[in-house]
Image (cartoon, rainbow, N blue to C red; front, side, top):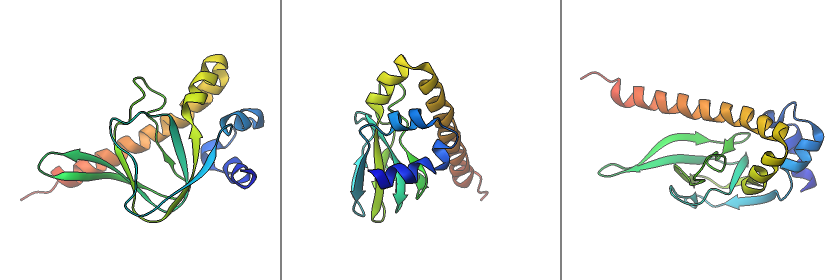
Length: 153
């Protein structure tokens, strides 16, 4: 985990985060890997962790009747996967699937929710960072909608 700690300390998501808070965030962190085609989670699953992608690519998808899976966004090295652990009812809102061999660090969202209630500074710092992730997802969805509905016949 020491290697991951050094990598994550330099990661833009954690930029400017107090070292003591970073160490708390990394409590329970573990290295994970996924094979191409492997589901990382499905919509409706309990959301108890999030990932920092170190290597590989993951598709974020929604499933629709008649069209199947629609890729909303693809995330890769240096990006964050998963924000549903922050918001009740703590259930996944999308599917996530590895599309190539993927290595990541999984962080314990449930633990961080509890610690954020105790230390509001930690909670504020995490919400600032995840707000950026949510904004990126919203922008990606907007672009996807423009691509789908913006074409003229």
